[in-house]
Image (cartoon, rainbow, N blue to C red; front, side, top):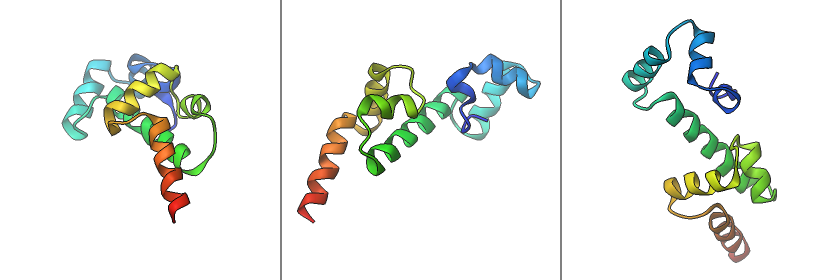
Length: 102
């Protein structure tokens, strides 16, 4: 459900209700079995979708952010930089530079 965007349009409480458990229990299960909270899992999936869009399309960064499920470009840039150590535009520029050199 998270891969399908359940936490892009709702919150953990909504997801837990749909699954018939409490939000606290759902979070405990995620931490125990996945090693991350439902929100962390959703964030990782969003960043993965964004990276794929950056690598395979020429969409503007703003459009990549929204299509990947981020509510704002600012939040997208911060989350992306935290994971990759570079901004989305630097990742894309690096890809172009590499492709042009090949």
